[in-house]
Image (spheres, rainbow, N blue to C red):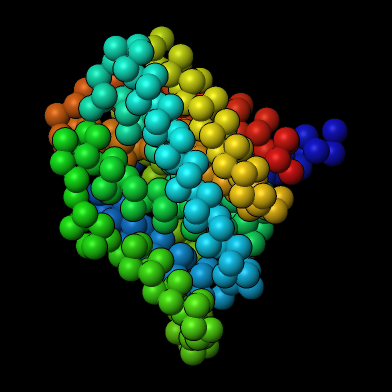
Length: 293
């Protein structure tokens, strides 16, 4: 019973904040999704990532191991998903990227913080950074048929990750006034991302719900299985193990819908995956946390 209440205490703030965003839109209030998303992804999240890495007390070797484990896990997920799509005869441009990449930012970072504390967040930003780089290159290639390495170099979160890693490696610190300022900006990221998630889901027009249920369940099984095997292979300690599995198991991100719409894939089907997998995660992620904690 204690474990159940602990899990509920972790997931309740996440879904309540997303619910606020959902309700805000349904009540007819204005929410400038593009502006808030840009604010979060170009300012708040990079500051969160940079300060988390600069101030981490974790062993750099542990972060390196987690990075390698993340790459292996995403590689295994990618192979599994591409084989599944080929067997089922589905459209790769529409379904591959959403099935591979999850919502490690809007949903994964808050869950990591609430479930595993600041140490969990420090691990989670590593997995998030790996996912972001892969999705801006391999992910865009899957949808558009062409990579976008130049886009990676324009992303503030990539530079924040590189800068934070450099500070960590060299043992540098920040002046107190700058650390406090960047830390304060970074604190905006989690509530902004969660509320924005609710807003985005509320505005989607999903289709193919029955198929989305099946694919969302398959995505969850594939992602948890591959992440679990990778974490076990690299012998990650308990918190890093839990973070890797939790992050990769997150539901389809709204950005997958945006990419599908931008590059001419079936955006409505991807919207169905976003909505169904997010709703499914309300039950699935607490169960997963109960096993990982």
